[in-house]
Image (tube, rainbow, N blue to C red):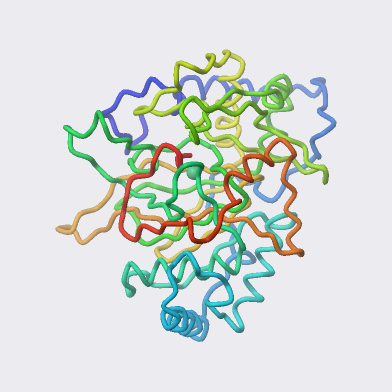
Length: 393
Ligand SMILES: [Fe+2]
């Protein structure tokens, strides 16, 4: 068992894959057989993320803020505050970053086909009020993407990734998903183009974040089990929480017009979670389908890059290309002068001409559900609230 695993809730959903299943899958993926059929639609060789559970080699993809940059962000905050606009009107034009914007923009455009993630480092969230942190995160994010995602049927655009215990009498009626627990999250994607996280504070121990490139994951699987990739390219039936009884039927793995691969695989939409099982109205997953989703996690662990975020880090990553996971963790307490793991999440898309996001045809309806709304529909909850099942990942 992982050192920080929660033990209070027995998960029968399949959201968290059993460790023995993953170690067997890893064994089978390591049995490289050079005579196994090559998979033509996978480009050879490692991609950007190709290390083995080591800390990131970050220098080129960390925008380290100088004191002048931080002053520019402070000025942008004052400028936005003076407009008295609501948070849902926060776009790049009313969060002006005269010198930083072009540097952020360069990294943002590169998410599509150059480097699929970057980090902005140097902020001190503990110096700011919660409101100011939300404005700064949303303001900087507006220079990365022009649209913020809303999960179908959930008006909350800002989500709080932090452990939120609930009282035992509310346990039967309140949804508390993996994002609001301390458990490890297996490799998955959220829904949308750009996953953005702002680290407000760190746990006492554990909680490392991991990224794995779908090109590396598929290359690893293709060496011994190309059949798994074929399964991932066939339709899965998964929950669409927009309406009662809703579902999507689509593959998890796509080849884009550019030849690049794309992945959209939310384990909660496929398996459900410990507190919201896959609904009975959906047909059961086949053993092959379950194995294929678990293989994404097993291969992801083999090719991933590890990040021990610092407080104040803002990370932006291509959520069509990178899968992410996190380790279980232990929060601190005030007596020991330690803090809790607390991240804010926004999911973005960029419609500016130079971005060239390439969304697979079979995901176009999903993207319409996520991004086709007016700014006024977006609600920002400033203080921690539980993720709804609709916004889960
Ligand atoms: Fe996630």
